[in-house]
Image 1 (tube, helix red, strand yellow):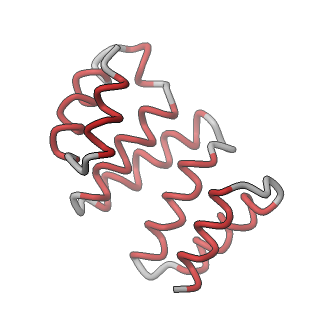
Image 2 (cartoon, rainbow, N blue to C red; image 1 turned 120 degrees about the vertical axis):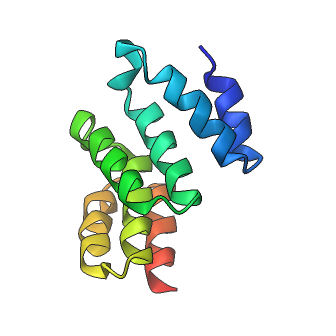
Amino acid sequence: RNYPEILKLIEKGEFSNAIQKIEKVLKSKKFRKDPDILNHYAYCLRKINNIEKAEIYYIKALNIDPSHRGALEYLGELYVDTKRIDKAKKILIKLKNCRCEEYSELKSYIEK
């Protein structure tokens, strides 16, 4: 629906506007179970410092798709930001076998 528009807002760093659009999309039952939308929603929430709600939505995305690389990486970053390095390292282990960009990015985020 409005997904390309939402992604553009996120790219521009317009997180509050993206959140408003995503919340409208999430009113549709079909999209409430979309891990990509839930992940982007959580990402925007984290960027405006709504950490607790962001964590809830990353976990919702991962409950639907436990191997969602984006949600895993960003939840790992949230754990680093909230000084829960052990949890971030557990997520890193989940990503290790994919040899993907998300693994490399979370690894360097943890090492910072």
